[in-house]
Image (cartoon, rainbow, N blue to C red; front, side):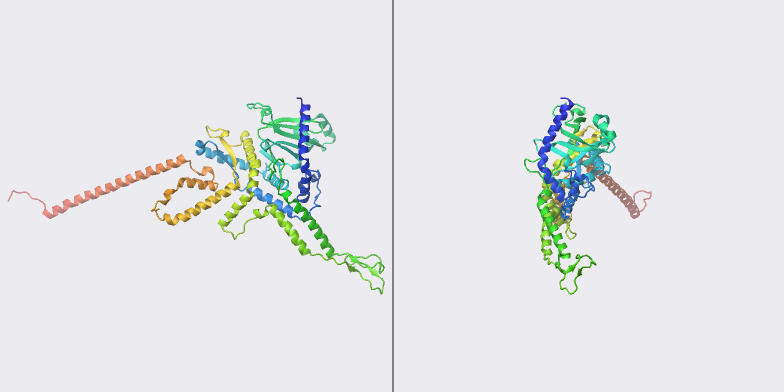
Length: 550
């Protein structure tokens, strides 16, 4: 199959993906219009500088969405705390000092990339957390970069067309976007079509359509080292000229496509924005009506006799209206009776409904009057509510994201040296779920309560041997897991046991020295006692003299 046929085949498949997405576009357009107009990437109007907020009369939905996005970011990828870990899959090696040092250093190196301003992760991921609740589907592109090793960018949903595998995971992504002719030449140079290069000199800022297709490769050599043998095929194509710009491949899918929630049989997701859309429409209509009513009350229509005035009626400040002298006719306001209080109460009900749909009641900070135990229980309740959503984020976004970055950094030589006898396949990157962390905190709380309850029974010296029921070593190491203590803080179990044996030997040697010292003191005392006894007998009997028997 030559390049022309391949280009035709790709464009045909793109049309199929576009047809599958067509029914969603009007809904996404309406969500952008009523909640966050700058997210409109479907009609082309969102790329213009015009605010496009003519449909918005109340900012509550936009604020609720931004609050949810910030809270999800703080829970999932908070830069102030480590949100993933690296584990050794070989249990016999996992406890060694070298392996623990490697996992800690590798995690710190990866966190440095995620938190670096040059890679753009923190700014891009916030846009993703806005897209997913609003549209139900988001997209982040993770690419290698010669300067920063890895670079992140959240792509507008209007550019993305996806397809799923038999397991329901997005494994095919087509991205259609535009570049200026000058940018295309900067990116691909002489690989661009002759038509593009010829027109670039006359109109360098004219836009050209680019299609990037990434999908599983059907035929490849699993042992091959070329990018033509990678599991995923990658092709860049000029849509107007059907000219293939670049062919290659990826070891991991570079496009992360998380979905907030997904109905059975559907490809694209559904988010709180779609659930709240009806309330958002009603709220904006009520706000518009309330503004009109308030305006009529502050500047009501006027009733003017048709023959009692000369010239126009001026109702502005300092305006003069002339009427015939002696006429009893006057300008009167048309009565406008509107209960704005009732209208505001109805609007507040809609606002509260929108806040609940966007989970603002679950993500608001706790008050200072709560105790630590109450705050922990409240946190556990939040995790139960957010659990299904965070679980899907973990499966479709965070786990493939971390694995992709881990692989890119390993291939670039940006990770520490592997311990002797270990291979990169011996390690796995795992996302430390906030749900698991909340559960661990609850376990730590119950452990403290158990120890507090048993303290009076244990007493001084544990006369009843109650602590014999507990494996204190396991408890100590489990507590470090509960609070996320870095792995290299703990000594390996072999070193711990060796230290204990050495302490026993040192204590035994010290006892022997003490015993030897005591024996020496006893012998010295006995010797002094013997010498003292001889002197006493001499004094008692007197010094013997020479002579015979009497």
